[in-house]
Image (cartoon, rainbow, N blue to C red):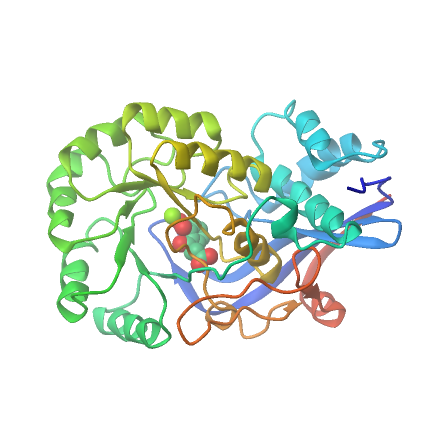
Length: 372
Ligand code: OSB
Ligand code: MG
């Protein structure tokens, strides 16, 4: 295996892509995806990474601005002096910086893409995955009315998405789930609360058991693991943790306490692909099912999520949808499309397998800085 000889430059871009339709959750309405992208160059080869932060700290404390700061002032100064190294060597040095997993993951992503391209390997081979088709899933935001939601679900069913997730919030839950289940009694359905409830809402949360949901995602506080264990004892719907799981120790804590039966692994939230691999392995050995979440990524981040799902613990469909569901125009080619049976093929070629289109990158860039 060839190592990375040296780093010649790190370039940061913030792109602002309009979403095909606004995306509403219990914590915000997004009309654009404003993404921090990293390009790392070594001997004329480029690796790309995407940071899953947003401009605002509503999903997590990290933002695009904090990520730019951490990348520029702490991560790149660690990275630049290294010679003949592997990605693990870098991650070990990043451990000194507490938190800021999304910023770390963005750098790790770019280094993995770079290393895979240097070695002329597809990324999934580099991380130890197996070649296979990936299951699809769609996450539908809160809609203005139930009819809009039912129409979106019908559309997703026609496209053969393997499971459908709907966003819910306090006061916008039971009636919605009831209407969806009445119209679609047999679909694989789940609900994501994005931390909108607390244990005082137990009576409402218990009523979710009537809807045969695959799981309820992150019902309680974004930082909580302990209270979720009480809730899981009270409801039969499996709990899936998203926001609360930031590292392997959190997954171990959740397992020890019985805080849920499923984990949504977002590689950005847990500090990258290699950390995700450790978590999926722990979960597989302990009968916790995992799936790959999404953060409305551009085609760069989505490609990482696709490669991640070649690892064996990813037994449930995740939030990986076709490109056109997010953007009318993405910055990479080729776009993600669904096969007639709803599966997604791994992009072919070395690294992440998708290529940034320079003209589109330039058109959507709102901030650019080069280091080195
Ligand atoms: O909680 O999973 C979430 C999007 C942004 C922030 C948080 C979440 C989401 C999604 C969409 O559910 C996932 C996707 O399709 O990328
Ligand atoms: Mg979620």
